[in-house]
Image (cartoon, rainbow, N blue to C red; front, side, top):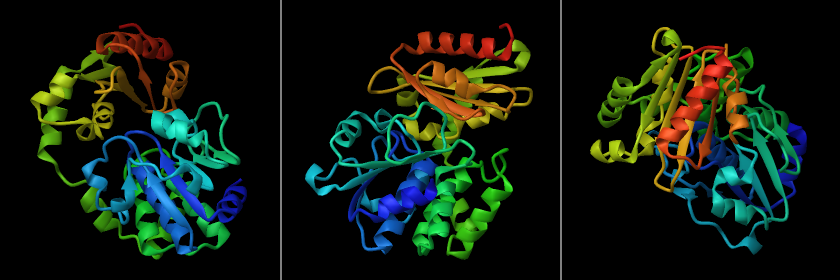
Length: 321
């Protein structure tokens, strides 16, 4: 399938690269990495992203070219939807735009029904979308510039938890080595991505202090309201790693974080240590993800969403509160 995607991308001269709303390291790394790969081959590329960009990724080469504005539809021959495979995950404006694009390819490593993309390369066996793009570029013999390597390495590093998660497979390490050989600097990337940010630590302290611990300590659920963010002078970008911190509490097998969104409704992120399939819970609620990391959006109040998620997670765990 990687060959089919590479061939499709090579057939177009003007492309739009799109990732999911509220982008993380893999979404931004994949978008910018692919844009560098395509520009090296003479393509005209626009990169679109909706939602705030976490400050730790602002160093990525080409970030100044990422926009929440879309080019004229008539200029775009093809779109590449990355790190998600449902257009609505890119935001309402992007979804409407994608409906008018002549052709779109998809590259994603999240689970969920696949109904979009020609071709659609969706494989949850990969640790990161950046890993998929790195392998595609290597197999196609494309030039990987230091800028492209840096972006792809950052996405692979963050989606493997700095190569600490169970998805840090030999395949992931082999690709990481190739990206380092191509010019990625692991130390420089790590200094940017994992720098200490005091405001984020203070917000995390509040989340951990208020989280609910259930099922004998096996389930932990945090919540963040818009009032919390305002009081801490923070925003959604400051919650980038909060659910991972909850999962890291000793004894916790499943963690969740539910936060209010300015646009209405809530966003929920769930993590497990591998024994519980949180993707199945997310998919049933309209979201998606992986067995150990998943999420969704819901048009519910914070309290309603929290109770629903707790109920579904307890059921998936075969546990009681």
